[in-house]
Length: 229
Image 1 (cartoon, rainbow, N blue to C red):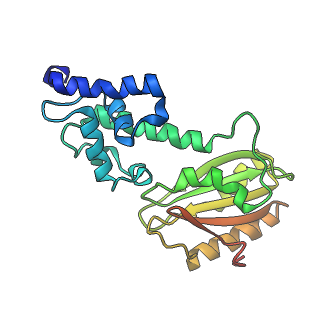
Image 2 (cartoon, rainbow, N blue to C red; image 1 turned 90 degrees about the vertical axis):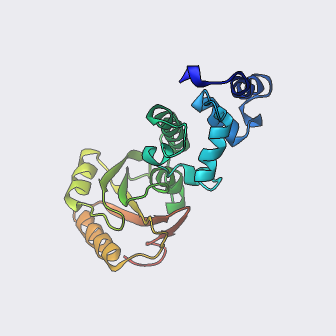
């Protein structure tokens, strides 16, 4: 890969690194940051130029870039599996930083408090997934996990697994969430039926289901606020 790099492109590839050293990461454009990840260009394009092409693939939107698969990244001429994996790994680190709990476990007093945990997990997925936040009676988060993933339009959550994990975590409160990749925010009849069934089953174990949140891109709806269970 390195043998194909012209002196002109090599110099352009190095500029973002120098700029970061002198001015800090915040001074770099998105394309320049991608160029650092890509590391080196080709005979026709610099690493920064490849970064611009990748951004164009995502409509110059970093949120959309988070949805692009490794296979799709490889469609950019000059981006092979190794570079695509590097970019995907960097985006995943960004997601994990966004959802990081830090040294103290967060305290959830309302559904809105759960969004910083849920959104990074679900907002960029191209398939449906079901997430559960397990909490103690005071609202302190004990565990967060994805309990199931489905296809493009539906996923099924196993209520028995959710309640089993709640007991293993000594949880007294639950918030569940799933995403609609289609962007449709409204709860389906299947969503409502599942939520009511889960709430009733949890109540038998003295566990309260606080909310079922639906994530649609960067929007969300609360089934509790809408009075659906």
